[in-house]
Length: 302
Ligand code: R2B
Ligand code: URA
Image (cartoon, rainbow, N blue to C red):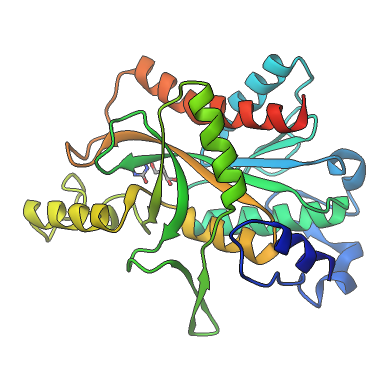
């Protein structure tokens, strides 16, 4: 019941929160988070993670180590060592913020999210906010734009996350928290970070699934690519990445407020190759960090 109450406090949410798996608590004591490499029996999870308020996530392990270190430096607080005991994901902690990478694509992200949700459960954390800080391909916005997603669209252009369970297709809603989004946009404007809001399309691959002309395979024409991007544009899509539907759907099911903040590395209307000068890449990948950090510091007072 307390989870339902939590969810109704969130703006823009209409869905009931799902309770954790009914088999979960019976197995609680022995639970091992395989892809994090530790479990209830091998780590004092409440002592290490019990104060968590934000879980920041994104694809690359190196970038998330860097983000954690930058945050620690900026807030003048310590940064943990890598707390993961597996080489699948890295986990850093700076005060009440966890920085965990999720790899590329929804299968990898789904594993990381399930284990993060179990981690929060074992730690006794009641209402963590999850934020994805990522990269993406822009549609009709200049490279370097930070898109704060209003919703996530799947590869069939539906506003759902499609899971195949027991041979059946299950579709779930992909809402994001409007209060967190609005607060992020406000901070972006205050900080002069180029922020836009819009829908995010989640593709199942980087090349054909995003209608690139630079993959190994390409059985469509250049005009098909532009027609598809224009169609997305007409549906309010500002960027394409590879995790948004799963991220939105899982956080929504758990009742955790969440947001997706992705910088665009290129405008797909102008090309497909991601080949930007190193200094530009560093500048662009720092933008979601600056935006999310300013927001977190504002709401936590850290
Ligand atoms: C954005 O960038 C990655 C592909 O290059 C993928 O994880 C994503 O969503
Ligand atoms: N990530 C994607 O998924 N697509 C892009 O075009 C750039 C980054």
